[in-house]
Length: 224
Image (cartoon, rainbow, N blue to C red; front, top):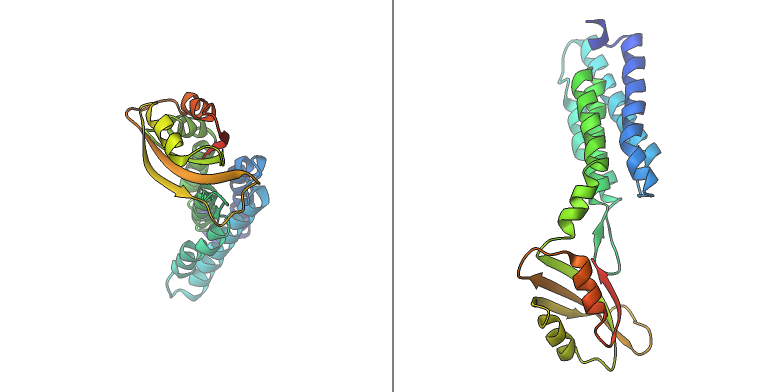
C-alpha cells in the first residue's frame, strides 16, 4: 500500500499523526504542570516517527541493512529524557515515574507511526491517554486504602517520640519504621521524622491521618 511506503503523502500523514497523538498524550501531563507536558510529548513522538521514517527510507533506497536499527536506539535512548523527569523530594518521595513511562510509551507510538503501523499507533495512543486520565481516580482510591502508608511528621520538642508511638499504636496501627530527619533543619522548637505505618486491615487513610494530627504535640502531618 502507498501509505505503508515512504512517500510524500505517507511522510506527511505519519508526522501529523505523531503531532496529534503525542499532543493528546501530553495534554493530561501538561494540565497537571508536570515536568514533561504537551510540547515535550509532541516532540518525543514526532522525533521517534522521523527517526523511524529515516530508517525505513534508508532501507527502501539501499535495499539492505537492518530496518529496525535506529528504532532500537530510540527505545533504549529515551531513558535519559525520562530519567530527567524523575525527582526525589525533600521528604524522600519519588515523583515523575508516570511521566517518564508516558514519554517512553509516546516514543513507542512515534516508532509505530514512523514505520506505518497506523492501527497499533492509534489504539496504543488512545489507551495511553485513557490510562493517564481515566485510571487516575482508581489509582488514587487504591493508594488511599492500602494497609501500609508512609508519613512525614513534625512534632513539638515537648512531645516524646515514645509517647507518639504509643498513641499511634492505640489506634490499632503498627509502626514498622521510624527515622528521625537530620539533613533538613526544622523550624525552631520542632522535630521531624518519617514513619511507616501498617494497619491491620485496608482502611481509609484520611480518618487515620486526622486522628494522628489531633495528637497533642503533632504540628504537621503529610502522607508520602
